[in-house]
Length: 103
View 1 (spheres, rainbow, N blue to C red):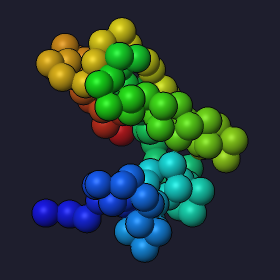
View 2: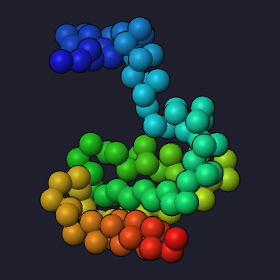
View 3: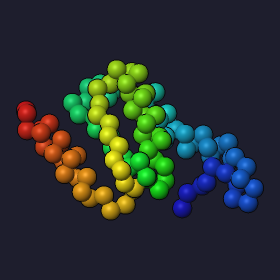
């Protein structure tokens, strides 16, 4: 169970709950903690352009913020949604294997 950041009947914003949601929002967190990502050897983001939850919007902002902060990363969008995208594992797992294989 979790609290929604708005009243279900009226849609009115619940400020105290919204503040908690924003604290866990990756886009907000990158502003506060993004410098630590500079030490990561691999930062890879990918998302579907047809994501049913529109998560590509946040991913684009996240990538832009990383770029503005000078954090090296890779960002890819693919032509699919959020579900049944196991075929993308070949890409991300290969990147992880290559990263750890170089040590």
